[in-house]
Length: 402
Image (cartoon, rainbow, N blue to C red; front, side, top):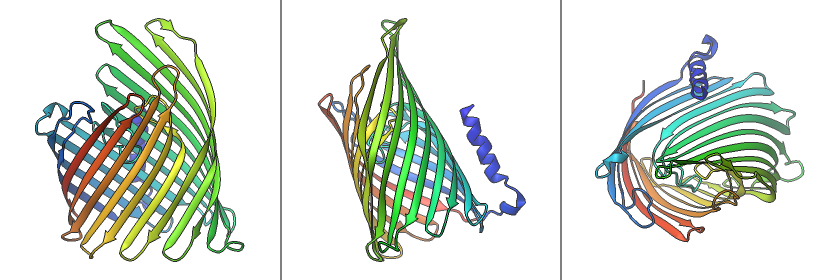
């Protein structure tokens, strides 16, 4: 039933009343991607190289008017592994969003996405976590925004997410419910080019982890439930027309319950609570030829594939250089430390480093070639093992304007 809610939302976006249903753009696209990797499974002891050919097809539909903005994007990936053909898969994703400004002061928004994927590295450069098995993921959110005055506005967001992970003899189901409230206030009357920021959020995260041992016919069940409250405040400031800076700091409180059952034998429930810090900071440069972003963060989030929430610290640097109207190159680097102290299974402490230089060349407005090299290092500090991977790819993309 969880999937059908996304389908209904998509149908709503595509069948809005006539006053809002004027589609500005409909862009089908196809891509062909060729990769080489020297460690296709991210193994720490048995590295296997392979070539991967991926055919991608998709469609983007968007609408924009004075009061409504809506978009829908769907794409399918068919991956062919030259040697490890058991890994061949057809994955896909769909994303939809709509924002409606009902009055000058009040607006409503909604978003939803659904994704099926099987690649282990799909989130390595955004979460630092390497995932095993086939995954199904759905997210949805409703939001409302309110302008209180010329100086202050606020936004309330409620979201739900679910992820199912399936691998040999192991399954994991995650559900998250989140409510967040944010306020933004212009402080320029007191501090030049400065905006005050305040956020408070509540996250309820559950994870059900099941393992099966064929030799003993034994099922083990691990249930993880966590409530996380985070509050943080700070400011953003435009230092010049090209440079901007933001900083938010605060605290988090996490209350966790864990249950473990092997067959019919249930262990006593384990519970613990912890207090931590929250930090979000960054510097951005937006120039004519260079775009640079440096960010630093520390907070508590859901950790798909890790059976529970994680305390995540990260630092990232992104550079984009426009050489000409047709050619540009980029460099993206990131470092993630994911930690989770647990009572019912081994603790998690993984450090993930990504270094990713790349380029993009536009032959025309609708036809482009991009390429990238990515080095990834995953250091498992609990088992004192690490895995490394080098990957390079070329991607041709063609858009069809209708």
